[in-house]
Length: 398
Image 1: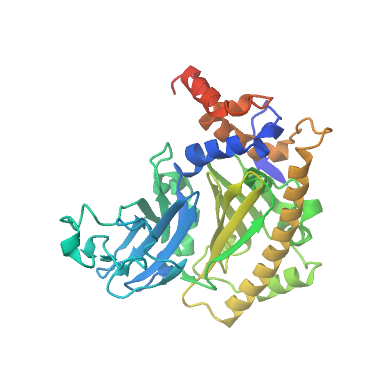
Image 2: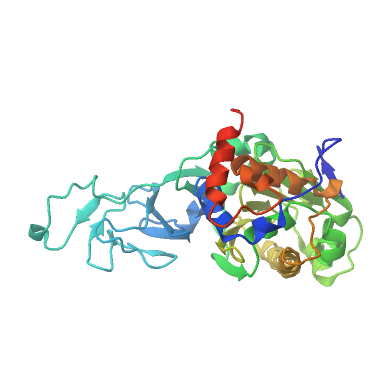
C-alpha cells in the first residue's frame, strides 16, 4: 500500500466532527458543492434510440436527458413550463413523438421546444423556444453524460480527465453498452464519510478481504490532479485464497484492446465531489453519492461492458460484481461506525497516516469552497452561512 505524491510535511487533521452532523452545513454543501459541480447521469448508450430518456434527481433538482429524432442527446430541467410538473415520471423510459406532461398534457418536442398545449385559445401566446423546456449545461465525455445545474469553478470534464487519457482511451468507453441498468441504495451516514472511505486504501488489508486477496500487495492511491484522484491495484501474483477472487482471475480473458499492463489491474478515478468512474478489464462503470439529509445518503451507479462481450467476459463480470458487492457492504458498516463517533464525547478529531493523504487533500478541496470548515467548533445556530460568506470575503484572491 502506498500513496504517490504525498508532500513531506502536511496537516494530518481532517474536517471537524460537527461538519458531519450539521443540517446547516448540508445546505451550504448543496449550493457550493453539488449544484456547481459535474454530476454523471449515465451513458449515451443507456438511451440508444430517439425518444429514450434517463433522469437524475437530487436536492429538488430534476434533470431529464433525452435522445432526439436527430440522434443528438440533450439535457433539460424535468419541469413543465406550465405548472412545474415532471414532464416524465419514470427514472428511465421511452417516449414517442414528444415528452408529454402527465398533468395537463403540454407536449414538448425531443429538442425541448414546446410542441403544443391543450386548448390554446385559453392561454397567452406561447413561443416554442421561450416556453420550451429549460436546458441544463451538459457534457458528453467518453460516452458518459455529465450535467451541471449551476456554473462553478470546475473546468470541463474533458479538461479534468485529459491527463489520464493515455490510459483511459484504451477502454473504448464510447462503445460501452449497459449491463443491468442503474442501481440505487441508501445508507444512514453523512455523504462525506462515504467519500472519505473511497479516498484511502489504508483500510483495505483489514476491512476488505476480497480486495486484499485480489490486489492488496500492489494497491496505490495518487494525490489529486485538478480535483481528480486515481487509485489502482495490480493483481497479486500467484493463486488467490478466496473462491470468487481465484475464479475471477482464472476466467478473466486476455482483452486484446487493452495493453498488457491494463489487463490485470483495477483503476478508480474519483471526480469531485462524489463520483467514481472505475475501469476493470471486463467492466467499466460509475457510482456516486448524494446526501438526502445530514445523516442519510443515496448511492447510485451502473456498469457497462463491451458490445462484443462473450460468455467468459460475462462470467468475469459476474465474479467481479460479487467482490464489489461484499466490499460495499463492508464500507457501509465502516462509515456507520465513523459517523457514530462524531457524536461521542470521546471524539476529538482524527489522525491521518501518509496512506490517508487523499482524505486530507479532499477535505482541503471542500475547505477552499467553504472556509467555514476551518472552524474547530460549530458556529452558533443560524449563523453558519453568514460566517462562511464573511470568510470567503476575507480569503485572498487566487
